[in-house]
Image (cartoon, rainbow, N blue to C red; front, side):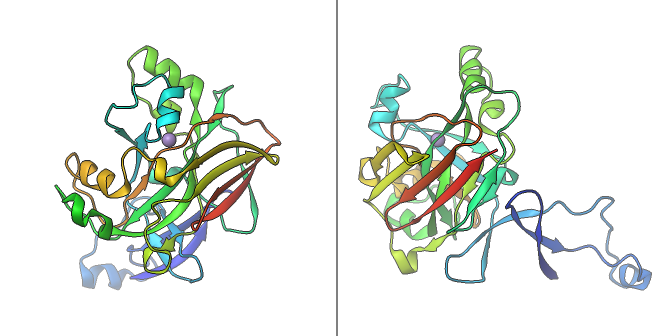
Length: 265
Ligand code: MN
């Protein structure tokens, strides 16, 4: 199997797994009895590893709602409620190299597009009913991510008791920076998590303020789904979420994990 890098759209990095035999060589397909894809194989998102040319291919993107007390309060929830989960399609990831400002397209059908800075945990091992005591060791590494949200569409979905995808799964709605392996940075349990717009700080929290820790999230999530290597978890956002407008620059930082910068276009 050959693997090559491809870029599609602004700052997206994909792995293209070339499983399709070359059509110019019919003997190839005949000898292997391979089936041909009738369309080009869809690309697979992959995160760069900081300080390396290696890649982390992504399977699923899970997200945790209301995992910092102050944010749970600002969203009108009881902070003692257990967290809940939702997903974004893996192709909503926008890879943001560190040290650059990438262009982030403002999505259609919204007038209230919100930022949520989040620690992203990337799983190297999966499983079902993972014990919380060992769940931390399933994490390969961590990155800075944004759970960008069409809040008006999400609020309307809440009012009508409808699914959240229109609010949460816009194209490019999951910007994420390079992964830092836990083998290098450890498993961050504390540290500032911040977001600013055009230099004006809007969100500031600390990873120690998470209601449910990363191992607890992995353990709980694995009671609902079988987790697999390549799964990401966006672990929730601190308080201060709000709208971003075209032309503004988002700067997200997590102490010890890195940062990403995006200009909304
Ligand atoms: Mn979120």
